[in-house]
Image 1 (tube, one colour):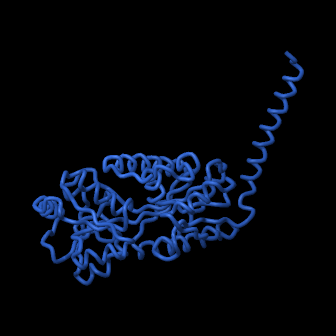
Image 2 (cartoon, rainbow, N blue to C red; image 1 turned 120 degrees about the horizontal axis):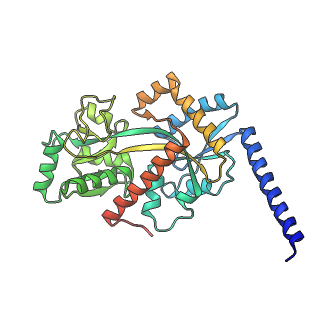
Image 3 (spheres, rainbow, N blue to C red; image 1 turned 60 degrees about the vertical axis):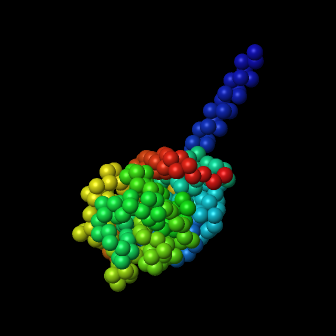
Amino acid sequence: MNTHHGSRVLRKGVIALCLGLFTAGAAASDWPARPIRIVNPASPGGTADGLTRIVIEKMAEDLGQSVILDFRAGANGIIGTDHVAKSVPDGYTLLLCNSATVTNAALHGKLPYDTERDLAPVSHFFETPYFLVVNARQPAATVAELLALARRSSGKLAFASSGIGSTPHLTGEQLALKTGVPLLHVPYKGSAPAVTAVVAGEAQFLFMSLPATRTFIDEGKLRVLATTMPARSPFLPQVPTMIESGVADFTASAWFGLCAPAGTPAAVQSRIADSLGRALASPDVRQRFLEAGAMPVPGTPDAFRAFFERSLRDTAAMLKALGTKID
């Protein structure tokens, strides 16, 4: 064995490793040195878009660099997510991840990326509470009465959703699984058509956010029976939770966060999370969130990673129980 050659190879390897660590450390200490892109994998418009724009203005002021919202919609968020997953992990390309990010991972047998391997959860952002909303013309005034009506309907009581695999769909299926009451799922192409269907009586109820239903609630066309949050919502404090209504361990919401390409330096991830947290703590930002029916949820990379991984597991278990999979 040539020990001198082996020593030279070892020295070169150690030097290369040290240089790599130094370069990564230097890059992290200099961050941000140029504008940051946040990829929204959905189309412009809607509550999430508006709230994100408000927050990134604050982050830009805080970081001293422009923060740009880059829309890359398509395939229920898969196109935009794939772009970020394959981007350079330097903290300059981020993903506005959400409930669909984990649903896609569980729903599709094949994706162009590996959600767990290729994405780094950086920070929780905000949640939009869901409410169980019924057509006001039907007789149920409580969750218990709605379930009793569903039992008598023998699987014909219909709930609407914004599409197969959407959070409203999975929340409705969760109700059926937890109570053992058969329900009929009717998917629509988006939240607005689903809400309209319940107003028209095509379906009897749905789980949906307050901004999407508030007008019809105020007009007396829809009735709110419960919220899916662990505690009562500050937006409708008189409305009980699903748990208070007798459905044990029942929670759900539409959530949003920031993810980065895997391998993004931990120091950069922490700076992103800290900046987002400061933006969300701003009184004017909190007021805008309150007006939009959303709840700011700042956090650390570790906390969001735990939440993200738990969401992946829970969603996969739910879809497996339903026998739902798209290859």
